[in-house]
Image 1 (tube, rainbow, N blue to C red):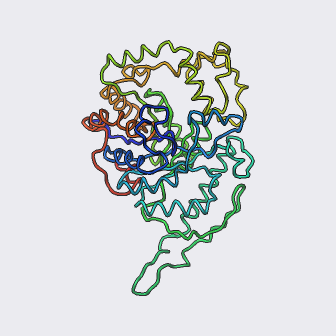
Image 2 (tube, one colour; image 1 turned 90 degrees about the vertical axis):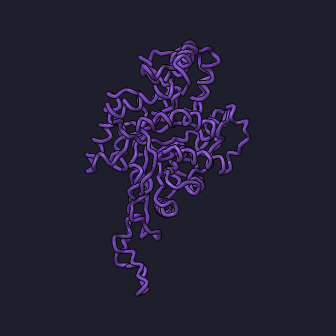
Image 3 (cartoon, rainbow, N blue to C red; image 1 turned 180 degrees about the vertical axis):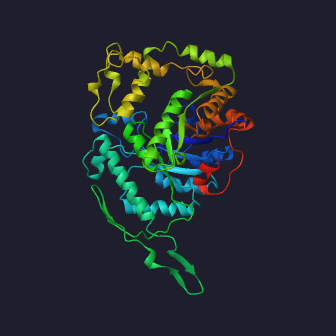
Amino acid sequence: MSRMQHFGWFLSRGFGPQGWGQPSADWGDDWTRPRLYQQSVRDLERAGFDLVVVEDALSLGNPDALALRVDRAYGGPKHDPLMLAPYLLDATEHIGIAPTINPMSLPPYTAARQLATLNHLSDGRLGANIVTHVGSSRHFGLDPLPHDAAYDRAGEWLSGVRELWGSWRDGALVQDAASGRFADASRLDAVRHDGEHYRFEGPLNAIPRPEGDPVIVSPGGSPRGLDFAGTHSDVQLALARLDPARIREYRSRVHAAAAAHGRDPEEVAVLLVLKPVVVSSREEAERIVAASATPDDAALRRIALAHSSDLETDLTVLDLDRPLDPGVFGDHVSRGSIAGLLGRVDDPADATLREVLAQHARLGLISDRSGLVGTAEEIADAIEELGEEADNDGFLLSGDFHPVTVHRYLDELVPVLRRRGVLRREYGDGGLRGNLRDF
């Protein structure tokens, strides 16, 4: 019997120009309006997905790199995903929605109140993807923080939010019509927080849900990021090769962090972000892989442009045949983004930019685990293997939210996964937290 796994969608472009630069943009959908997103989220719910995580970036980045961010819409514009969440929740009944929130952008009291409100309105289907990017500090009148200090601030923020959610203790909400008494003030906690980064008081004037607080999601594979997940998160997003040993090792690090903070490791679901290329036959897969083996300069330039936006560093002006000097990246560039660029090169210090970019152009077959190109059956083979051999919790498919992109994955893959007993056919009760605990 196959092991049931959780599935979600990582909306990689955030609340931004869906389908831009792709033929699907010719459908003429307005990315600033809710209908496009509502159509896609309804289809994901029909498919049995547990949640959607909506990426975000607060800023267009370093002023010197503005053109890199907006010219091809790689890094912006982006509207606020927290404002999109109610439209997605209203269009669905079961799937969870986790907009990205940076602790810089909302004071703890405001965040606790807004998230508690949306959790009620959605019947417990709200999540929050907590990120720590500090490059946007100047927009909020704040000084940038080092990588680990940004996690310290996020931890203080989230602990404060949870204090406020807990300021209504058990029994505080009375709602006794006979006596006319609505609440017991003696069971409300004042919550006085005076920390390194935040200062506020409670109690919160929004009530908690008996079924639990919003689900907390986090990315980040650094030691500090994994420690944050072990301390705070219900879902950890992972970028890892489809190798059972590597995935077991990653999950063990997350679970060890949870245990170190007195939590049950099974409370944290680790979901791998996956972007497969679904094709109709092995022959087509082999043709696509062979065609990608020797990328030309134009293909490498397209890859350089995409990474330049994320890195806020123009790679297109560098010599393709010289070693990539790490000194070209400013202090504002995240370690994760640099590691993502370097990928699997054997010796980053000696690798030329051509070698670094070429690895992103070259595709591999999922059948031999060298890449992600394959038929729906072959992709399902890999998913089953990881569920059984690595005890994997599930996957987030990654892409924009245009229906063409969504159905490129769903049309062939969903029936195969359901036949194999890997993907749910129906939902239980309990909102997003219940989805994650169903199996």
